[in-house]
Image (tube, rainbow over all chains, first blue to last red; front, side):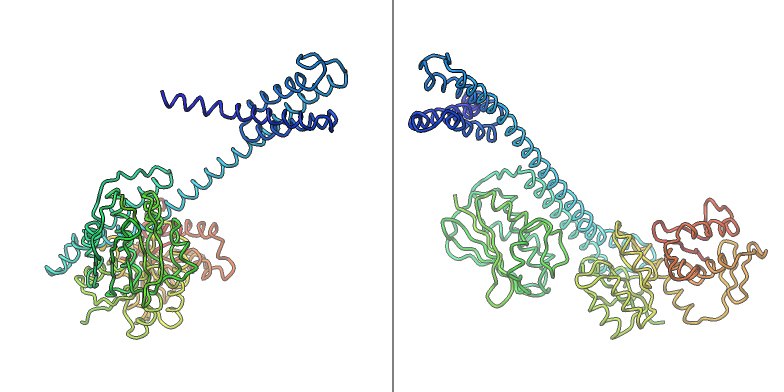
Length: 349
Length: 229
């Protein structure tokens, strides 16, 4: 019921607005009629009608044109209060007004449709570019873990090689870890296409962000091996209303990023604190840091820092999109003592 | 006999890890480099017997690495390429890479290519009069004669030049560009059409079934390979 009345209001709106504008024009004409000639008065009506055509299309413009002509006749042409026109020049003027407003409405409407079509075409082009870039990312970045898996598995199956127990364990671990990486990649790709389609709907529930961070760090343990990783929580953190899988992906991407783009063995620090009515998570690394001019680019899909060759270029763009869908903020600064510091802020409730 | 030393150049630690373990278990000593500079340094510091080179490195093009290696060493180079990178692959072969495998590759395939490359390097090192035998064909490079099932086959000078070049690189892939440059001279690298005609003629004279070649096999989009016994 409510929806239908909303629809009606939505459809009638442009008509009512056009009529209001025409009414305002009547008032203006009434105020200055004594000082202007007929053609000037008639030209004034063109204003609301052209605007209506450009904004809402042909329908409201035609209604506006007809009402202007009838109204002007009724209010300003003798005999007043009737639709009769005594003088020939006035009759001609009204016919011309009707003609010009209708033609102008038609033209403005055509221009509006053209612009709309161009916008749609642009959207389609952008979507195509996105798909191409996505395919490119998929072909390159799915293949790397796949290659590691295939090399390890085919190596294990090979009859004439002499593997120690340790070698076997190492190859099996490679297979398992690279499968996890493939899984993360697939999750990122899914979220990327959802973000692009504008279909991200966080299923929000109260979550302990500290727990989420620890889970992400645990899961990435193989990638982080040999690195000092410190998760520090200062004070009590409020629960955050968020989608567990989406924020998990955000945190995983940030930690994976820090691990992938810094020298192995260098420390990664994750600090959590309550701030601004929400929770802030800062992931600091001790790598080369990120040049100021590259920072903005980092959050766009398929962009990577210049020095960073690996990765799909999706992780940060997805993180940024998901954080925005939660009404939060994602940013990057320099970490004290070199390195990059990515910070996520999520509102508490 | 000491283990042959292999330098693995790949920026992905996980690929290096799989290769390191599998190659070690197959009797190779493995050195590693994560980028082009490190690869060139490592190759100069203690020259390996073979290099496995990923084409997508963070600091420089794999083709450039290959080129700079060839300035001073003939160490066999096998490139790792991704499907769809035909262009880069061919350029790497043109500047002197010996062979390629496409990711994802299987270990037995890579190991086979490595054996061919090492064997070839050993042959070139101990050059001399050589006869290449394959699929009933005998190519006598010293006497410039070619036999099929014991009978001499008459080849035109161009045909012989092609067979000679393929035989000298037996087992390894040879690009269209390399063949055309050697056989027809610089500037004819685009005459792939005429090269196809010569190859077809050669197959008619040398293959048991020219429609299903077993001696001179096509590497699609890249070139040809002469399969030696």
